[in-house]
Image 1 (cartoon, helix red, strand yellow):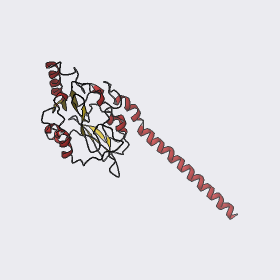
Image 2 (cartoon, rainbow, N blue to C red):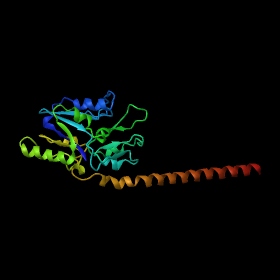
Image 3 (spheres, rainbow, N blue to C red):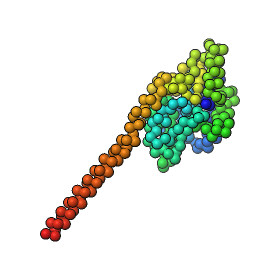
Image 4 (cartoon, helix red, strand yellow):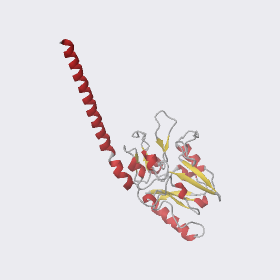
Length: 253
C-alpha cells in the first residue's frame, strides 16, 4: 500500500506542491467564496499550505483513510478505496448528497458550486500516476523532500527512525498511523496537528463502524418510502376514479 509522509520541519512553504497539483489535474483558478473554510481547500484546490507561527507550514490534503468514513457514508458507491491506498471519487455515480462531507473527520471533500450540477471534489492521490508506477505530482515537485512517497510500512519506519534519531526535534507521534484506523497520508511534526481534524477530535476509532448501521438503513428506507408513496398515489387515484364514476352515474340518472 502506498502512502505520503510529510515532515513539517522540512517544509519551507514554497507551495510547489499546490502548483503541481493544480497543473496536473488542470484545475481552474479558484473563486473564493464566503462559505469556504479558511484552510485553502476548495473544489479547485485539492492541496493547500496552512501557515502557523514558528514559522510552520503544514500541507493539508485528503488523508486517504484506510477505512474511510466517506466511503461508508456514500449511498451510491461514488467514493471507493483502492489497493494502492488512494480513496478515489467517481463523479458519474455521485448524486450530490454531500454525506461524505459530513462524514469526513478531516473536512476534506468540497462542493463544486461553479457547475450547474455541482458534485464534490478532493485529492485522489494521483491514482492514475501511482497505478503506472509513478509518484503523485505534489511529492515529485517538492524541492526539499518535505513530502515523500513510497510504501506505507517503509514510510512509517522512516518516520519513527527520524523521531528516534532527533527526539528533541519532533513530537513522539506519527500523525495518521492510527487515527480513525490509520491513513495513507502521514505526518511528523514539532507541533501538534490536531487542528487538521474537522470538526471533532478523530481518535483511533474506525469511523465506518459508527456510520455503517445508519447507512445500511438508507436503501430499505428509500425503497420503503417509495412503496408507501406509490401506495398513497394508487389510493388517491382510485378514490378520484370512483368519485368521477359516481358523478357520471348521478348525471345519467
